[in-house]
Image 1 (cartoon, chains in turn cyan, blue):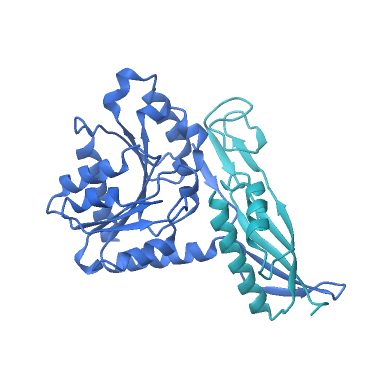
Image 2: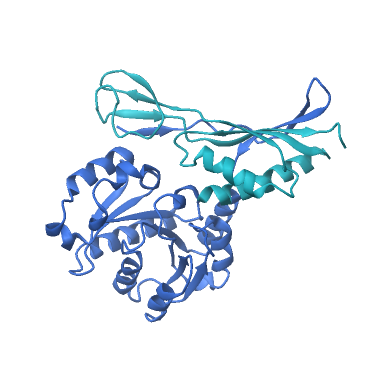
Length: 118
Length: 243
C-alpha cells in the first residue's frame, strides 16, 4: 500500500499549491494522471484519498483520475500496440525488440478551488 | 533493444486560471506527484556525492538475502572501504544487530508499518553518520518488490535481489522494481538443484527490461559471486568518484 504514502504526499502538495495560488476556499475537484505502468493503483489511490482527506482542505473533493495507457512499438513487425501492463515482448509477434512509450507518469494536473463559498 | 521514453515532465510552473464560471479557481499544477520525495532524494544524492559517499539501495522480497549480501560485501571490502549501513524494517532491529556485530556503523529505521523507505527517512538516518569518514552507504530497504519501486532514496545505484526459492517468474510479475535497477543478484543459487528455476529465463527477462543492468549469481553458502558483485561495486564507486 504505497498508495497511502503517495496520497499523504499528494495532500501536502495540493495544499501548498493552493496556498501559493492565493486561493482560500476548499478544494472541489482534483485531476490526476496515473499511467498504467506507474506501479500505482488508481483504485487504491481513491481508497487512500477517502481515508486521508477528512479534516483537510481536500475533504469531500471530487477525485478524477486519468489512466493513460502505454504504447509498445515493435521494431521487428512494426506493430504499434496500446498496452495496459508492462510487457516483455511485442503482443503481436512476441519479439523482444520493442520500445515502450509512456504510461509511467504520475501527475497532479489541475486543482479546482471553490472560491464562491469563502 | 529495449528503450524507455517517458513524457518529459511538464513545466511545474503554476498557472492559476479562473474558470469561466468565476466560482472556481482552476490551478493548473501539472507537476509530478511525489515531487517532494524526488527533490529530497536529489538533495541526498548531492550530499552523499559531496562527502565522497556512494549510496546503494538494496531491494528484494523478505528473506531473499539482503542482509546476508551486506555481510558478505562488508567482509569482502575489509579495510579498503569504510561502509555504513541503514537498515529499513517495519519493526525490530534484528538486521541492525547483525551489522553491528561486524563493527560497522548502522542505523535502524523502523517504518512503523510503511512498506518502503523514502528519501526523508534516509535523510534523517544519514545524519547519524559522519559522512566525511565514509566511502559507502548501504541502504537495505524494506522487503518488498512493489512499493519500494516508486521511491528514489538518493542512492547512486540500486541492486535488486531475486532468490531461487521465489521462482523465475518474478521479473515478469513485478517488472517495475527490476526495470529501474542497475544490477540483479540471483541469490541462493546453491538451491538450483531443488527448484524448477531457470536462470536463463530470469536473465532473458532482465535483459529485456533493463538491458544495461549487470546480473550476478550468488550463493552465501559457497561464497560464489561475492567477488564479482564486490568488484563491480568498487568499479562503480571509482567511476562515480571520477566524474
